Image (cartoon, rainbow, N blue to C red):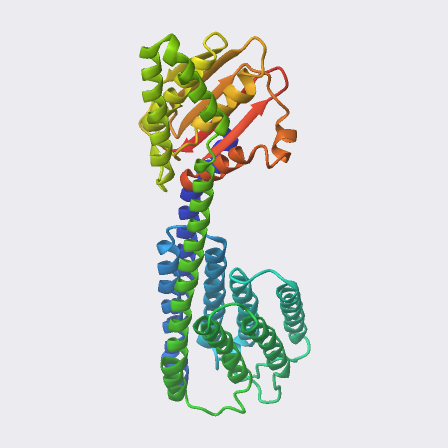
Length: 469
């Protein structure tokens, strides 16, 4: 049961994790604002303007991250990477905010150097986190693998350079006045930026994304490059801070909005594709009714027409009910009440008992029906118990269907005392046990539940379906 609890409660844990991360981002933003005010950002116009822009960006990223975190109705791997990308940007801006709150203060040279180094690192690592997100929408091939390795290598190289920078200025140096020294020109950051930029551009342009999506990713890729070049070369770019503010509002924010719009389109396409694939799996599984069962049921009905016409009429009615429910369930993409599944199971079992009146026994231990299951998820397990467990035993046997609830779960158990089987060997035969794999897939995807099988030769089989409340 301990394992089931871990696997059955991912959504609650995920919401808690998102809340903790968002709270941490809010705390960091508050620290950034408090630090700026504590160190008197009003001491001159330049420092005030820079801090206002950085703090505004910090607040904007915090709110945007919260919006993204809590609007995720269904978490995917790509959404996780997108969240990591936003956290990466937030950390880069946070350390930049701390650095510029201390900027131009002679007594904080060491602190400014450390904070700027962290800001530089997170700005550069944006290439990696953006690539990991983008890669989720691309086909895995030699190009994507090479890009991943090269960007990772470039980031490691850059981190090493930042460490060396503490002892020998290669990227930047803070002079005695607490400002960036004009004596160091940061060619390393520029070269690393353009190397990563080239890799991402090649991977994006040769991808199967549409033109708008390619443009949105390319625009997002270019933004950190522009910032890094100008931050690292303030002696080259003599723009006033007012020009920078206009640049950010007029160019950077619209590009980010285009990127986020494209992100939504990609996520919707990915979720729609996943839902379509899930529905195809469901339809394929449901449509695979055992032809032998149909033929055998008709043969039994035919024999009863002469021996017991009244029973034959009941069997015909039960058989038509069984077929009708199968067709109805095939059109249902959402879960159904367990009571509906149970009625379908009883119809199926009744027909099977006509064939094996003395060989097949069924027992029901139903303590709860007020919950939902994927359509035709329990019935195939009962069918397997009868077909592969009981009918292959010379003496026959009993199938026990149980349903009950605990504080956190609904549980359905199908147990038989038939011939049993080697579970691992059987599951390796994907063709023979496709129905079990499809059922497990649907239980997990549709209900966040689990399907476990325990069996051994000559010891019977037990199938347990656990669904979190």
